[in-house]
Image (tube, rainbow, N blue to C red):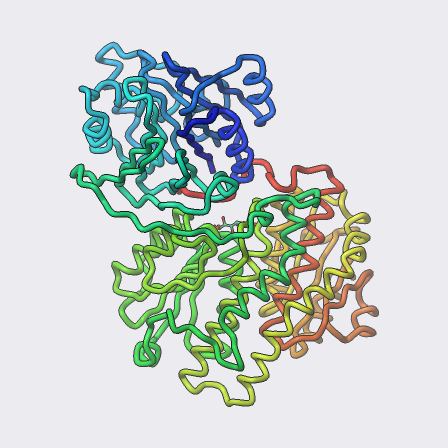
Length: 607
Ligand code: F6R
């Protein structure tokens, strides 16, 4: 969602702030702004729309100073406009604030301040924070912040500068992520790592209710009792080029192409000579033996990875698995106890609903294992065990390589648990490990045929609607293929369990409706042929996707794409790649903003 950056050092702040905001564009935004202390007062420049608007204004009104904060806003309270953009100042101009998150009780707080004749200029909840700071400030900034925090309900990451203490930036976190970059004679704040990666790899992650005071040569972090806290430095070993486009037109395409590498890293970090090393996962064999149920809790594509996980885990471990959308899980009454394992899946590790699901599961007594891409993120910290996917930074809003690595971890987890529980013979286990190790090369093979997918896209990029159908694990992939297409191309699409079509949805099939039919599972191939015939006899044009059965598939479909053969449970890792490419090419042909689709944000840190 919104992005925060901040700089304090000896250089001009503005170039860093603009560059940092550019690196956070992928999170989604509709306006941007910066505030810099110019030696006398805090100057603010902000613009609705893309960052280039802000750049243009900044180039006309030079804004000089070595301490500043910046923000990309994704509107929640108040429409996108110059006025509603951050930073927001307090009435005298003493404080400037950037904010990610939502202040739930801002109306009460605003009314209270308005009754004291404090005027507001914007419709935002954030302006309330700036005004409250000034209202409670009696000469000690930390005291004022603690007071303001005690009044606010909701989630917030804050960057604050104030003209009484011009040589510092204050950073505050509650629920919404915020990191501090540690430099040499300069320090930074950011809502996400890519913003500071070109400057430093050493960071602190602020935890809930922590307040950091950044000066040029020091960073001090306090708790709500104003006690100093010792923070552990985290080193970020991401390859800096991974957060750059590196000659590709779009991050999404680059990340699709990076999947073999991401899969190799994730698998080889764990699998050596037929051993899967999960020594860092502390769940014991006895706990595994006592497991009655596994829940997988996640949102969006991570949820779709979970749906694949259900088929894989139930097949290999024979324990019932329930996959739940995190925003549903957190507000229902799931039957969870100490004999339940909850697996939370999240690329960002910051998704508000997934995090709430983790907290709820722990309260109910379950053990929580998370599969997360961002080291030290909130979900990782909340979980009993964490397995990191080694996808590297994922910048495009639509996930691709993180999703693929989530599948890889789910396969490894299922295989490891199945082995520990004696659910697989040595022979079966070795077969699956060989199949796992072979996946990156097979994905490479599919990517080398990307032009075929580009051709299908060129024929159908103008269509109104696409249906994805599949059975069993192919249904799980249909869900992901459909989401990828709709989120970046804005084409209506639906995913259906192929056998379910005739219970209603088939009435939508008419002459020319485009259907993508996944038929990778040998044992269900004939059933899929019947379902394909059901739609073709009603006029559908069908692209069939399989890994064999060439002649039979050609006989019933208009177009075909064949993926390499693999064991049934791992076919999703291959089948998803052409669907990602299809979504990408369709979106590119339609001229959509692929990396930053409308209304979407990379990291959803609010409910
Ligand atoms: C779709 C997509 C989203 C995310 C979802 C969860 O391409 O990226 O559906 O999968 O918002 O995000 P994380 O994995 O960060 O919890």
